[in-house]
Amino acid sequence: MGVLIETSTGWGNGMVSGIASYLDDCGESWNVFLEPRGKFEPLHIPKGWNGDGIIARVNNAELAEEILKAGIPCVNVSWYDYGEGTIARCTLDEEESGRLAAKYYLNKKYSYFAYCGSPWRPDYEDLFGRAYSQYLQTAGYTCHTYPAPGIDRQQPWIDQLRQLGTWLTKLPKPCGVLAIDTQTSRQLIDAAKFAELGVPETIAVLAGEHDELASGITRPKLSMLDNAAHSVGYNAAQLLDRIMRGEANRGELVTIKPTNVISKKSTDWTVLSDERLMRALRFVRDNFHHPIQVADLAEQAGISRRLLEQLFDRHLEITPSKQILLVRLDEAKHLLDRSVLAMSEIASRCGFDSPEVMCRAFQRELQLSPTKYRQTRRGG
Image (cartoon, rainbow, N blue to C red; front, side):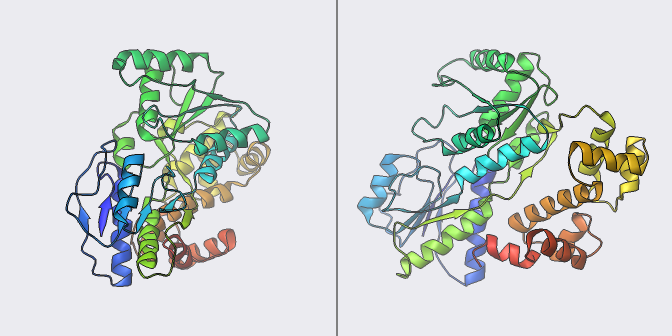
């Protein structure tokens, strides 16, 4: 089996890890062809290679034609739909991902929004950005979109920053900006700094893909949509296995739902007029893995518990204890999706008193157990 996926990104690594997990679970002894590849490097079927199946990021027409000509069963894990109906596809739900990003900013009480696509994807029909914009419009807001054709890849780096910085300067503030990927997001942050715009208090930046390395090297650290690379890889391997066994057709489509946003410093701003409430929210973000209580939030905010509860209800329509729970659940979902950690370890890392407490929270909020959640994300 051939894996034609770049290994230079967190997304690619997570995808390959998901494929490996499927092989572990199903007991398959596939001989896997995999080579190191860059994100925008053209991928091809190796000359002389005659395998039984392919999992590939089919991001160009030439690769799609190669696959169809070879007649080898393939699962495309890209948002590109080359070979639609003839090459199976397993990918993150683009439109639901865009809507999740919009909900994230709306929950942070933003009123101004923008979207920036990528000049490195000239043939991509941007359903992700369109869904983000449409959801905001349905909620009564305008989404400012970076004007086509976007950044010229041949431009000097400093000119690209000036161009982006000029656009950011003209946006209403404070503005929540969504970018399609980590590369574009990092460029937005650089452009904001160049234009002397604070991130995140003036311009918040959210990346539409997950890459821990890219986030960690960015200052401020980059918030990212969890694009469930491990789950996509796992389900893609499962789909390919079914196709090779004759149990699925070669044009099948499997979409994986996004789960949450991994919040870092680049969106660490809630558009609220009350600094006391913001101190409480930051405290939850930084300390959810500890056994914190509502009283601890009130102490950090410098107010009584009763006033804190009133502020949460007035501005966020949620209780402080529910806020703590939701942050813990988001981290638990992230670990269940991207790791093989035991339930006891996940519960401990997320601030739950025990695995049983975490299980009850999952049942109450998501109507399924943590084990079932993990199985569902992995096609079980």
